[in-house]
Length: 90
Image 1: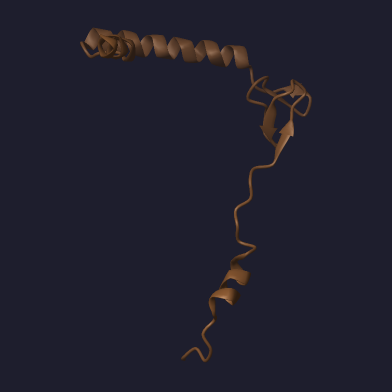
Image 2: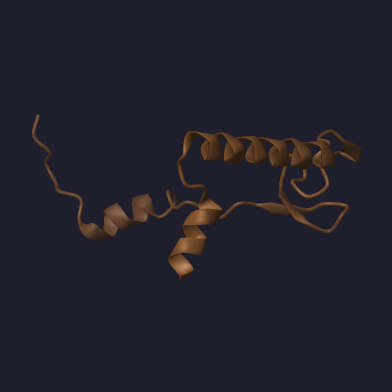
């Protein structure tokens, strides 16, 4: 089939006017930080008034992992990020 009438730019734009992406809807947590609705707060780990994520344990675990990775890189003879920054500054 052949299209009888071509849709002009105006009609195309009017049709697409509702397809725009809107910004994320943020809500304020009890701690005062902004967070996405229906998600746990990344700052304090609370959701619906209860602590569901242990933030302190998470940061300790991340620090252990980065320390272990740096140690493995040093043992293998590769440069770590800190050494690269120091050599770049000189």
